[in-house]
Length: 121
Picture (cartoon, rainbow, N blue to C red):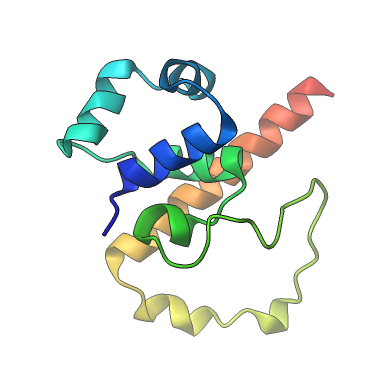
């Protein structure tokens, strides 16, 4: 089974980048990257989201190797309409604490991206 690091390395190579350029582009220290390779640490949730977005791959594939690294759906800029009746909020209580934390971090990251996009306008 491939590790997260091996999947990231595959993405870097498939894009024709150097590891150094990848680290510089995403603001990752080469020391942290080396720790990922040695299995000493793994990327944070926010960094995994950034990496997945950078390479247009799913988080499922990046984290657990499920599916294909080839993107099937690519996010585009724009607003999303959500029908409040479609949200099943009681399901949140059934999530494990680490799953709730992942969702919180994703929401924070999304807000950060939106803010950065607005700053450029």
